[in-house]
Length: 281
Length: 185
Image 1 (tube, rainbow over the protein chains, first blue to last red):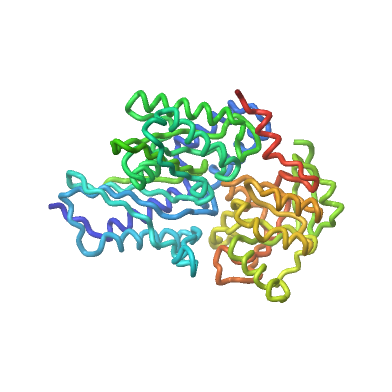
Image 2 (cartoon, rainbow over the protein chains, first blue to last red):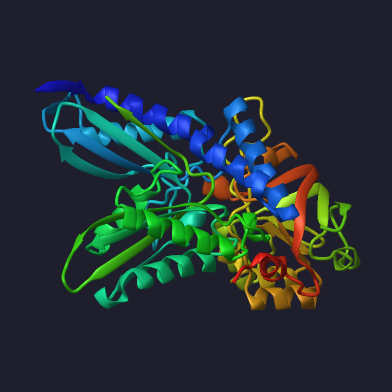
């Protein structure tokens, strides 16, 4: 067994959120620049320029890219030969989130009860955490600070098996285009297909964490990603919804085996400020 | 985009009625912030027949919950939040003299009708350009509802705060007209 102190988890969680909140990924930054050059709409071009400039200011001055610094979502891959010592794993994760948001001047956006009290917890906890046990003696921590303008535009649908690829395609395109200006386009579209209802949703969230420009390893799904991206960008919605050719930067599909009777499809949308980071300890 | 217009708050109805969808506007003066929870409280006060803690006459509300200010800064990052969540409250505030909202994303027909009736405009700021936008905010103070944290009503003094008229007081709407120009079969 390899022993890892809970404090080390806490420190890494804190540092990952602090980093992701100010530094946009190089993949997204480069894609935004590429789309800026290609954008035909003058207004769309101006919006992309402001987004790129904003990302540069945020990185230079260590400011939050967006004021909505999100709900903290973590995917932990915990090697089965690892023992977390001197503390509780979940508490270490929440303490890391707390330190990042309180000490890092990030916005505290979490309410304790969704329906009745809606009282702000004042430290952005609790996080949403998924823990997978995997072989080995490492811990991989992947975090995303998920903004809710785009989260609110996400949808899930239980398609019929007969709906097939065309049904998936139509549902994803409809979801992305109908979201219009609301999720801060250009967006990243995470798609989870298969499993059960909640499995599809988790797959779609994970799909948002993929490097922009990378495709699903299965060429059929990779082709579907390209086709959907092209159709979304034909919509004309454009940057900030003010018209143009750049509505989405990427469509990323993850899939999983499913039941003979089902074809669950979840579409998780993220704004252009897709803030995520990972580390393996 | 047609032209760049500078306006100073508070504004008159005729001033905002001159603005057209597509105009780039630089706002200088005080603006108020407000999101879901603050709007809910304002409307509850009115329902109880009480006075509002802010005078909305001739004012703009910016839909924003800023991130906290770092030491030495006036305000943290402060980009717009999605406007449709405030729709249930907006027509009431427009009747009280609110002349404009600053946000991002679509607004319902009901709100646009109320804007036309009362002579008001909807400005779009670029969502996610929050660090850049914060540079135009020169002073920030909490006016009320401090317990709401980021959702408290702030008064911002802004200089040349950059926005675009997305929906004007005639109901012309860039979100409807502009994507059509770039739509492909």
